[in-house]
Image (cartoon, rainbow, N blue to C red; front, side, top):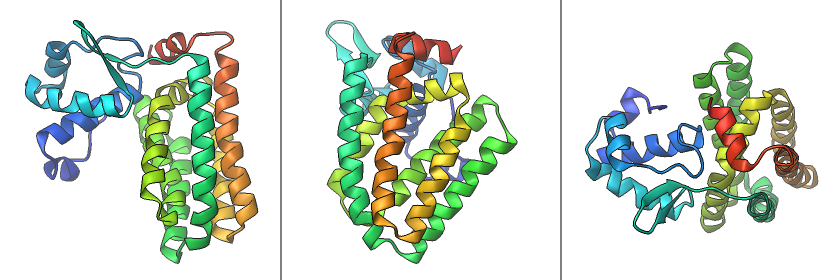
Length: 237
């Protein structure tokens, strides 16, 4: 499972560290949609007691990443194509509203951060192709999108976006792992970053919408060949 850096880990409580590691493991396909999370097995795999795990699971349930099944325990959440379309459409509405405000309130520091993140993503995808590099790229990708929207100063909207992104992230990552289509994503990121730097509101909002639409459409096309659960399972092999 991907882990925080030693410096970061030292500053985290054990429950927080377990929460982050388990969340990353789910998003990166270590645990597949629908898979039961046997607490004894998961705790042993992570090298911790069940206590911190019991604290992490309700947080992940609140984010929509796991579900509590009566008399069975927690399982990784699974969605059907229509539910995934619904979540994408909600995300698109939220992101475009936030983008329209963020572009007007960005600062030179915001611009520098976006430039740095898009360059880091490019370097990560160009230099390494192993599974750990992909996990690093996905983390940078989340930070990149957050950096472009945070200047809006809309924390409640951002929490809703983060929840929507998290629910479908396992499928987005699985599709990119299988297709290796990082170059397409990188090209779109470069366009987004340039529109953000230029302060071009109309273009930035349009590209924000199109970027999520393209991800949605690629996934839905994939689901005509594989179910969401089959896709995630294939990418984890």
